[in-house]
Image (cartoon, rainbow, N blue to C red):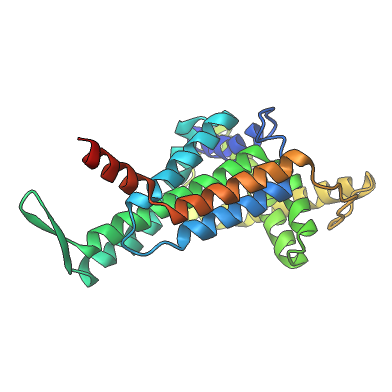
Length: 265
């Protein structure tokens, strides 16, 4: 039961942080989404052997997380769920690219190792950036901004329902498991079929009640509302994110600092 409670808490942990009052929280969702997409696109445009050039992107993302007041432990915990998939995708590079690029402590380092760490680092930064967006923007503002940016309604609706329905299923599963425990029983493998069926029916019933409650209060799916213009600070934020990404793309800062230190000392 504690595992389900922890899973349910994780689902809402980032959404709870979106009600903060930091400077990043106050930026319009459209500017944050556009800036995040551009930032990730520039990050993915690097060559496969680039590794040191990615460090400024990681430092900038970590600085944004600290400015927004997001706990590092929460980011690492959420990122850990996505990195295993990237890990298995990156491992293949160790077998397919064995071309030696340089020597380290008497051993030849192949290009596969650079590709391996480059894929992992890029994946982590991308997930990190998306988590910052979620932790600083309420879900209804994200979906509203996606509609304002003319993202297809079917995609926005699917994203919105997935986010809402995941929490509903988790809450119903916790309630049903608590009922099993109070009756002195325990879930067995043979009970999972009926448990899953009842969970689906209860979740659909609850989701339908929520939908009718929203409609009774005047809610309307897909309604955008008034499009408020972007403010000055939104444009400044967007220019800062895009400008820094382009600067990091054009200048390899760690490499430049290394050459400067070599010349000085």
